[in-house]
Image 1 (cartoon, rainbow, N blue to C red):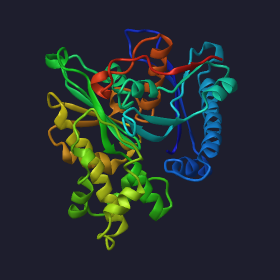
Image 2 (tube, rainbow, N blue to C red):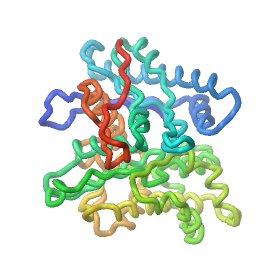
Image 3 (cartoon, rainbow, N blue to C red):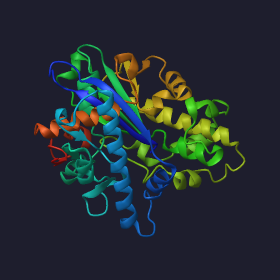
Length: 363
C-alpha cells in the first residue's frame, strides 16, 4: 500500500529465468494512499470513490510503464503485454454465499488507452470462481524463478500480507504437490502502527522496532488468532489484519510503550512466517525472502533467530532484487495468460483445478 513497482521483463528464452531489463517505482500520493486504505472498509459512496481511485491508480501505472520504456529503452510495440494486478481492497473468498469474492481496484481499459499496449488484469477472480482462495498466485512463479534441482527451499514474500512457497528438493519434489499459502500479517500492522505513532509510512529498516522490547504476553494474545492454526490452503488480507483487529487485542495493554508494541508486531510477523514451515514436507535448507519486508533489517534478524538451522537470505542473493519479485511474478502470470496456459495450482489455492487466469484488454 505504498506505491507501484514495475519491471520490464524479457521471457525470450524459455530455458532461462526471466531477465529484468529495467525497474521503476512511483509512490502513492498521500491522498490516493489514504483513499485506498479507507476503501478497505465500508464507508459512504464507496462505488463512486472506488471508481475514481481506480482511475488514479491506472494513471500511476501508466507513468511507471513510461518510466520503464524510457529506461529500456524500448518502444511500446515491442511489449507483448502489461500485467497489472490492481490494488486489493477486499478479499473474502468462499465467504457469504460459498463463492465469495476478491476485489482489486484497477482500470485496465484506461491503462490500455494510456499506454497503447495490451493489458492483462483480474488475475484472481477465476480461481475464486473455481472454488479457490484466489491467493497466493505467485508460488508457480517462485518455483520457476527460485526452485533448485537438489536443495529444498522456501520463498517468503513479505508485503502487506506475508505468503510462503515450499519447494522440496529433488528427492521428494516429484511426488510432492506445490504448497503455498498466506502466513498472516507482513508489513500491514507494523506500517499502520508506525504511521499512527510517528507519522512515517513505515519503520525504515526496523530501527524503531529495534528500540523496543518484545512483550511476550502481548505476543501470545496476538497469536491467539484462529487463522494462524488453520491448515493450508488459506489466504487472508486487511479484511482481518487491520487496526481494529489490533486495537481489540491491545485491550489491557494500554500502558505499553509504542516502540514495544512495534517490536512485538515485528516478532508476530517473524513467528508467523517461521511457523509456516511446519507444513513443509521436508525442512527447507534455504529461506529466500522478498518483498518490502526483506529491507527491514530488524525483521530479517528476527527471522534468523526464529530459524537458526536454516539459511535466510534476501532474493537479491539469487539475482532478483526483493522489490522486483512481485512485479516480475505478475509479468510472468500475464505471459501465461497471453499464451493461454494455466497458472493457478489447485494444491495452493484449493480450487477445483488449474485455470487460465486473467482478462486481456487489447490495445
